[in-house]
Every structure is written in C-alpha cells, then in structure tokens.
Image (cartoon, rainbow, N blue to C red; front, side, top):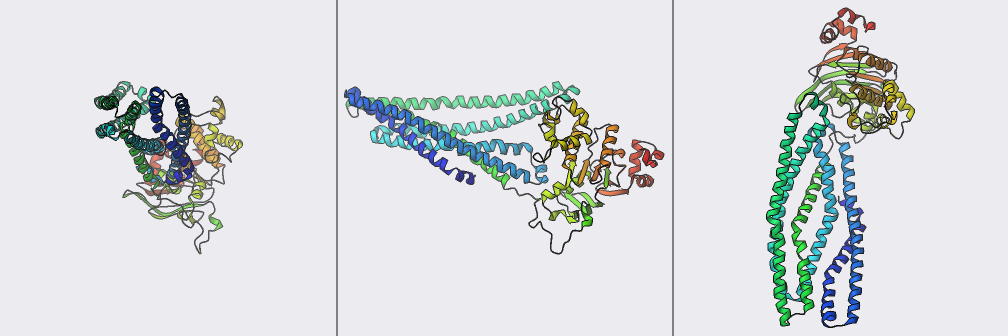
Length: 582
C-alpha cells in the first residue's frame, strides 16, 4: 500500500492543501457573521455591509472550489491505491500453488479482493480525508471559541466528553451488529446462490419446500439481525441528538444573558452559537470514522496476509542447465515418471509410479475413483512437487524448469469442465488470445466434433456462453474443452476422464482424430475401456500403485483388474481379444 500512496503523493499534497483551505473558510465564516451583526445591523455601516456580502460570496465560491479539488484528488488517490492492491492480489493469487487453494475458501479470497480492498479505498480516500478534516475543524473551532470568549467556551467543552463517549459506545455496539448482519447476509446469499444455481436439481427432486424452509430460516436470521441494529440505533441515537440541543440551550441562555449585560456583543453571541452547533459533527461522527478506519486497517492486514503467502511451487533460481547436464535430443517431447511417490497431509497418494511416454505415443491410465489418476496430472503440471522420485520432460527434471515451460508443454482437459462467460471463440483461445487466429479456433472445434452444434447456435462462434457453460449439455461442454486443449497445440495432450458425457459414437470419432495427431503425445485417463484400448501402454492404478501395465491385449490375457473392468462393461472375453473389432 505504501508504494501506491507514494506514487500519488502529489495528489494527496494538493488535496491536503485544498482541505486545509476549505476548512479554514468554514471556520472563519462566523467571523463574517459577527461583523455583519455588530458593524452592519447594530453599527449601520453600509461600507462594511458591501464588504461582508462580497466575503460571503467569495467564501462560498472558494469553499466550493477547494472542496471539489479535495474530493476529486483524495478519492482518486484512494481509488488508485485500492486498484493497485487488487491488481497485486490477483497477480499474487495466480502465482500461488494449488495446495493453497485446496485449503483456502474461495469466498474468503473474493472478500479480500472486493470488500477488504474497498475498505482500504475508504481508508486512503474519503475516510482518511474526513478524519483529517474533522480534526482540523474541531481544533480550529475550539481556538476561535476561546478567542471570542473563553468563559462561554467552557459550556460546549463540558458537553463534548459525554457526547464523544456516547458516540463511541454506540459505534462499538453497532459495529457488532454490522458484523452479525454481514455474517447473516453471507449465509443468506449462499443459500440463494445455491438454489438459483441448482434450481434444476431442486425441481428434479421436488425439494422446493425443503429449500424454502432453509431460505426462511436464513432470511429470518438476517431480518432479526437488522432488527437488533435498528433497536440499538433507536436506543442511543435520540440521545446523540438531544445532548447538542441541550448544549445550545445553555450557550444561548448564558451567552444571551452576557450579551444583555453587555459582557459580549450580539455578533459574538451569534458567532458563538454558530460554532457550538458546528463543533458537534466531528464528535458525533467520531465513532463512525474510527470504525471505518479500523475496518480499513484490518482489511489491509488481511490483504497483507495473502500477499505475504509464499508459493511452495516456484521457478528454480537457476533455470539453466546444471553444470555437466546435457539434455539429449533423443528425449525431445518425452515425459517420464521415475519412482514417483506423492504424499499429502501425511497420506500417501502415489507410490513408486514409473512410466515413459515417447513423443507421439499414448498412455492410458485406468483405476477406481481415488486411485490417484488425476494426481498424476497435477504432478505433470507441477501443481504439486513429488515427495520422492523424478518427473522429467525432455530428459530434464521439471523442478529445474521454469513453470511457464512446464505448463506450455501440456494441455489438459479436466474432469470438471470450466468455461468462462465469454464467446465460444474466446473460450477456445484461452491462454493465446492475442496470437491464435480464427482458422486455428475453427480447426480445433472441428477436430473436437463440436462444429455441428456450434454453428447451429445463434451467433455461432461469437455466441456468449453463460456462466460455467450454462445452457450447454455436458457433452457439448466437454467437446469445447477438448477443442480448447487441441488449439493450444502442446506437445502433450491430457484427457482426464473428459469424454464421460459423450456418446460412444462421438467418443470414437474424437479418438480417430487424436490418433491422426502423430506429433502429439497423449495421456488418456478414463473408466471406459473404449477410451484407452488403443493406447501404446495402459497402466491400471490401485491404491496409488501400478497394479497392472501393458497393451490392451496383454492386459486382457492377464485376466486381472483390467479384464474385470472389461467384463463389467462388455461381458465378452472373445471380443476383448479382437482388438481391431472394438
């Protein structure tokens, strides 16, 4: 935050000068009123009357100008500080390792980027400016009152401490109410979001009454929190309004008596009453301003916590070849696992995984849910580091390679398809939006057998896809995801159970397309025999270990786990032997 404040120093400087000037005008205006009463109304001096009128006009215009410049520059500076912090946070969040997101709530990160950055905006913008203005104004008014009549100044100064105490007490109480309202609002929003997003599921299971009951509970809790806030405000707020009125009565009574006795002039009394009225607002709003400042400071601390988080997966300090290391041209485009183990939170996920995929070859991976298939993908992308063993790309340990090179080597079609709320073309171009031409996009969509349904959609390739691909079927989303991966033209294509929503005919057609891409290595993870049967090698995982490996025919002959899966899906051993007929 400090660097952004320094970058905007001249805005804060000019804004601060304008703040002082506008506050000085506010403080000095009652002296014009004093002159108007004593010299014009009582003294009948027309020359002073004309002067005071001009001073009123000049004060109004001057205050308007200084206030505008102050508001504009200070708010602009606060905006730039918050915007810079948001940018830093997003850039840092993108750099963090996957394990961080496994343990951190998405809503928490959104709150850091949106709400906490907004609180910092307030702190470095209007709240900081307002607190400064209130402080200068209060001190200036107290000085002017003492200058006018120090004895009469005792009256408002006696009322200030209890007024400040009540304001701070109210703000502390309302602060707790605000926190409760925020929590209840978050819970209510979560229920609403879940039910709107999953409305099809709710209707399919006729769960409307149950979900309405959940909504009513959260809605009632949110309403009760707001009622508590309103009650606390009603209990104390009238007192905040009453004390200043009582103070003004005392000021008018005591000052009026002094004016009648001739101890002070009528102009002094009018100016003093004006000051006694205006001195109240800094005290009344003290609690509110301190609360916003506290929120801003707390928000910055939360943001700093995110920014101070170090990624466990980083580029190596020296990405060049180690002394004596020579990467053979024989290994270009090759990826290998050599005795790889992986543990997470003390639990072993993978153990002694070894395989090599030559450029242009295909590896099939099968196994039950939780066997560790997707973990292999995460390790290839270096979302996590291996616990033991080595993963090599082109003969080089990936821990010695820049992350950008590792991620550029492979293109992944994940189980959970994610499409952005953008056009079909821009979704396919993801990662290469500035360099990928339309021809590449259309070619990839054709290879993924998505051309037919894309061209039937209104606006075709320029059609806007809804959030997470809403409005598209599961198979259509998978085909667009495959198109996105093909358009990247990476050395390695990874299909992580990414044809599960496709019919057998479409899956077979896509596999035919992939077989023709001889320059691209492939890892196909699936539960269907049809997905992996044509692979150059198939490994079957069980409890994180390679239980079986070989070609389709070799595994069928072993009559092990792979054979059992085939029997469950086809129930025909003789057909299993006829690889070409599958």
